Image (cartoon, rainbow, N blue to C red; front, side, top):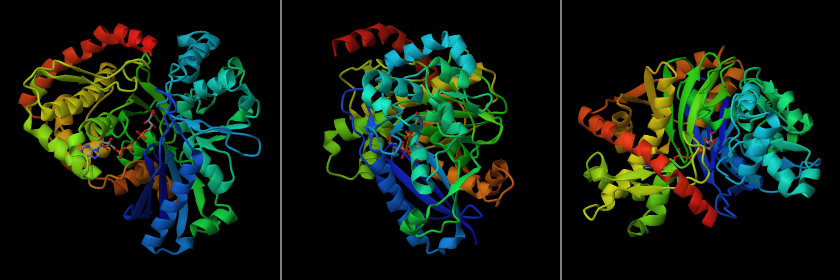
Amino acid sequence: MSFYLGIDVGTSGTKTLLIDEAGVVQAEASAEYPLHQPRAGWTEQDPEDWWQATVTTVRQVIKAAKCKPADVRAIGLSGQMHGSVFLDKKDRVLRPALLWNDQRTVAECEEITQRAGGRKALIKMVANPALTGFTAPKILWLRNHEPKKFDRLAKVLLPKDEIRRRLTGEYASEVSDASGTLLLDVVKRNWSKKLLGKLDLDPDLLPPVFESEDVTGTLTTAVAEQLGLTTDCKVVGGAGDCAAGAVGNGVVRSGVLSTSVGTSGVMFVHSDKPQYDSEGRLHTFCHAVRGKWHMMGVNLTSGGSLQWWVDSILQGLAGIDTKQRYEAATREAEQAAAGSGGLLFLPYLNGERTPHADPHARGAFVGLNTTHGRGQLTRAVMEGVTFALRDSLEIIRSLDVPVKEIRVSGGGSKNPLWRQMQADVFGKKVATLAVEQGPAYGVALLAAVGDGAYKSIEQACKATISVAETTPAQRKATNTYNALFPIYQRLYSSLKQDFASLAELQ
Ligand SMILES: Nc1ncnc2c1ncn2[C@@H]1O[C@H](COP(=O)(O)OP(=O)(O)O)[C@@H](O)[C@H]1O
Ligand SMILES: O=C(CO)[C@@H](O)[C@H](O)COP(=O)(O)O
């Protein structure tokens, strides 16, 4: 029997699981680590924390599954996208990694756009506009703000690719995650020498780029010993967490769309050819499926908004564990009617990406009155997050991309109220999968494909992934949300200037 490991280096923690060749999960483990915010809008993590979490969870999973080391044939890696691991020539980490939701690079985004010859020229080279979360502006930030460290810079790796380096001793990336650096020619699926030249960046700073199912190396002797595996164990390219999650949801063909309510919110659609939103609100990235692409809208503080609300604001619920806190809060939200009594919430707590690429945008409750209670406020937070996903869905629909089926995933979608709310806000039934294991499952499948257990990723998904349940939209709630959504959409335009003025005062 062959087994495959999937490792997802997430923002809140690393999740690892082991599947057999039929795709059945044998064991899983997770380990959390801190996120550092040295200033408002800055987010950083220590790559060493990711490595320790990887070692701990792999060892736990191997111990629990009781499989023979030689039977673990391949590993797939997934991780939070866009993060920058800066290494010197001896592979020493130069500073904490800047993360996907870090907003410090506004000036560097302008610099990139200008050096590229304007926004249109940039999109032609790398399929996307410059956004603060992406990796290229982080490299320029290091050059502009920490020049001594930049002088020692030898390699820039994405979070999961740093884990790959530690597992195999190899520098490598793959097309889906590399798309989010803003340095990949997304159409040609290789680094854009043209943009690197215009940015005056040495191409050697970047690792070779593979397709997601390609084998990029095998475990080093020391690591194989440390993890209780063998040096024959392969490590495949893997995928950024969005593409990996999509593979884990079976979103590997046209017409199927997935949403994820994690810390971030993602609306992801498969595409057989590169397709663009001319306004650059959706990202156009390579899919983890060979020769395919995807578009996605990303909300920076999606489930993260409910997490903030429940953990930081609902102090009355302190003292009970996280799961119970969410359950208690959402039970109260369930008592409130759809539309939260005319209360709207904007989930832009840390700025936003889709549809408003605005690092200065902030959260807001609008429409408060003295009859509103805690349940309505909690419900408004969940509805605001769901409206933000609908913003992406509307852009996808406006591009004539077929939307036949919506599959929901992520921690938030495990909650029945949030599943129903998504169906009602989208005005379309949503599906949940029999086994929803997210990005770690997706890359474990990629590892199985890389090892030859399946002919293709499409075949692997067909054999292992099935829909368990569908939640239809309720007409009355959909009507309420259809009436509120245009008001929600107008609020950002009304407040945009004030968000900018507030930012100046900080
Ligand atoms: N029981 C629950 N009810 C509602 N939302 C939940 C529940 N449990 C988790 N969540 C939401 O899921 C989010 C975490 O989802 P997850 O997919 O684990 O995120 P990530 O991988 O980004 O850390 C939390 O921020 C929270 O909003
Ligand atoms: O920035 C993006 C995708 O473009 C995020 O999706 C990150 O990849 C992190 O995701 P989570 O840790 O919230 O799942």
